[in-house]
Image (tube, rainbow, N blue to C red; front, side, top):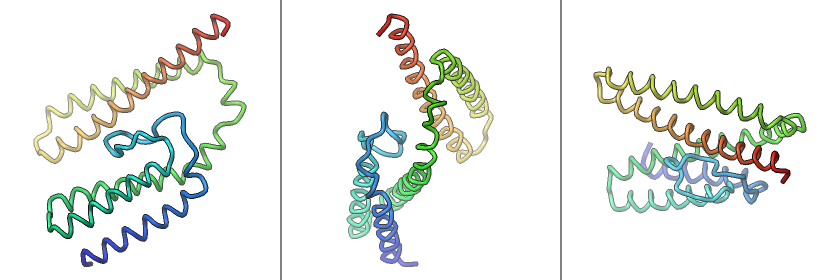
Length: 178
């Protein structure tokens, strides 16, 4: 497959994605939907992420014209990862709406706090396991894979701790009568 055919296929995929995002692209989420390693966008709307994808596609076109092979490979890989992530996010929108039932909303803050504390403990254990594994790996590619897993786990741990802090503030406000 030629470079032009690949670029054309990517462009078509992005346009299909854009048409799927159009009806719900303006809806904001409470927090960023993706890790900062994947998207630089600080927005919380799907169309914000789509705009970044389109910008990366135009950069890819420019790099192909300039024949910068190393950058082309990097940007293309990142672009494919972004498209895949956005497609997954779109696919889960119906599930997210269904999960926000009154039962979930009536969850006691203390129960949520306990759940998140358990998540935090498990994430810490997983990080410690990966760190101990990292020192024992012989090949560079295995080390890179584990380092990526570590980065993802640390991102999840950070978000978990942010959620814990938010729940603790809610409990504090609840106890103070606010």
